[in-house]
Image 1 (cartoon, rainbow, N blue to C red):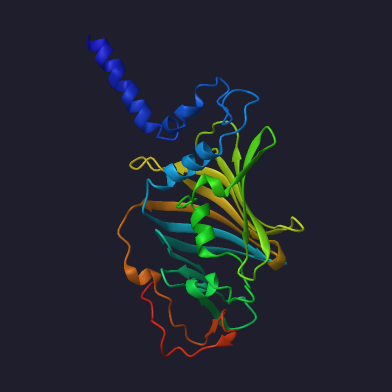
Image 2 (spheres, helix red, strand yellow):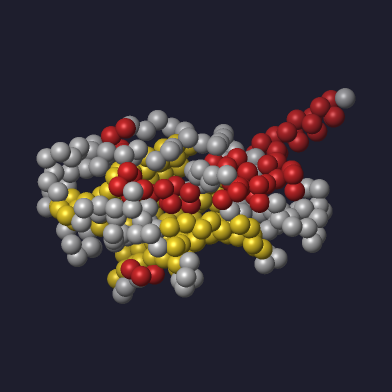
Length: 302
């Protein structure tokens, strides 16, 4: 009996140490090949795939990356950056990166608006827009298509919505969840989530890419590629550890390594307030005009 209890205890311990990424795929185990499609030759189950994404996302409310390493390139220029990421559902997001202690990039979002700024941008603008104006189609140009909501999905926070908004395609090795949508300018686009068809375990990523494509030409507008993952041992949530953001039109890539990660920690609300920046003009993407700082809140995120 002691040997049986000891074996049972060790088995539970191994299961906990392995994280929950193995147990959440139990609905796949009916097929010995662990295929998302169920039995070989069967049609893939869209709802089960979307449920997998949503189930992972619901395991966390906030995400904090205290040690963000970024290898960035824009055209012929390349540089290494350091920074942090704060994220809180549903729309609170902040990513700030620095070079030798000097701020280089600031991307943020709260329940009301989103913004982005880059030191290397030719115009000394902090671009911002309210979600109300964005949804109303008032944005005529988007200098940087990396919207915070899209980055939240790539970080695993979701939400990924109901299954009926997706079409599922497979090429044998990968599954693609495809959502047809429109850009803020009314242009038809495709949002594609690429996943391995077979079960993968950390550090190998199950979800490999988030693509935003021009629906007419199929050209890539921007993308996030997950190259390795990690598992939070307390929450059992699968998180990206290494990922690459690409914006081909801007000749920009950002290779991210996410270390010092905290799940469901307390984050000050000031982290998600758009900051007033010296020597920078706030540019409203909805009006296409520079607006005064007077009515803008200042942020305490440093």
